[in-house]
Image 1: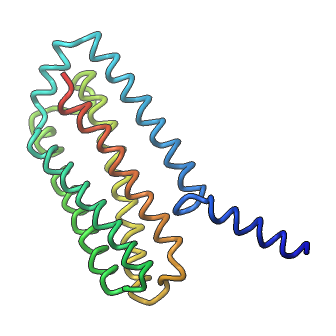
Image 2 (image 1 turned 120 degrees about the horizontal axis):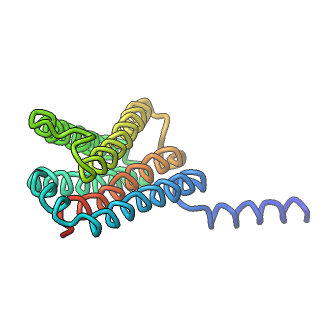
Length: 198
């Protein structure tokens, strides 16, 4: 009876455990709180210096920002579909969709690098003004998350290819997917605040 009780309690814990495990969700919570706090400080500063912030915002490339938003949202869709295929035992489809996710993530980085190059060429660095201090800190920290996410997804791609992950063993990939969706979510906080808010 005691063994049965232990098994039941373990099953109950597994049922209520979030996708990817509790640890990744704790990390996601801390990351979102951190970004939200910095964005709140940005908004406060914007209220204090509206003219400078508005003028600085017009120096941003909204076209690249919008395209990058669509790219990340699309990559999130393919990541979810890749995990769904893996859970169904279709590793071939999971690999193809995961590869699309990785390519889209790389495209995001390439476009962001182009945007950074534009700013540097025009002498707009970290100390240009308060707006761009926030711009560089927020977008560069987010870019670092995307880079880490791509490393994780690349690792999972090759491990799935080797047969290390499958329908019965996909928890690590689910954790990676949660991290990637966090990158999407953080960008969805950054993009409207920096590029669109007046």
